Image (cartoon, rainbow over all chains, first blue to last red):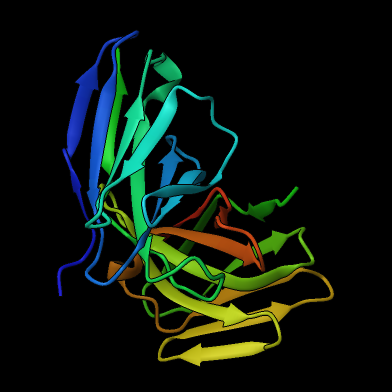
Length: 114
Length: 111
């Protein structure tokens, strides 16, 4: 069974650019959640996708957007990058949206905005 | 809103027990979790406890939950150098999509 994978591992962008991060969910999982982890902080919830629809969103501006595909893989897009967007971006997949469903985390994508 | 607090740093000697503490504010928290993060890596779920439990033991790990004080602790018995990492407490309430994490406790194990 393949776990959650994310690509790329590292990324460097400049302010104002746009970035797309990718996540492949664990086999059998239909729910993907994205988190932002700034240096020295705990992860903060960005949004969740369930069966290709956004299913909940944290306190992030609209320039953070996402997609989920029919195979349940997902993308996180960030437009108009700001310096504060520099962080580790984690995706987590789960077999459903219920609070009892464990979320399995990928290794993350480290984004640096210069 | 939900808030989770943890102390920043803990240093222990190899072979000693480590106790990492966490407090949370949301009384509707249903599941409480402990995650481990090693340098440059994602989050690894260590253990979790359901809110109607007081204690859960899993090999070297013991989780204690005081629901009245909204206090959660993780005890690691016989701490090893491989246990050096950042430990995150997280909670999730019924009806909520997201996990709410603390800022993490860095555990340093000295040989």
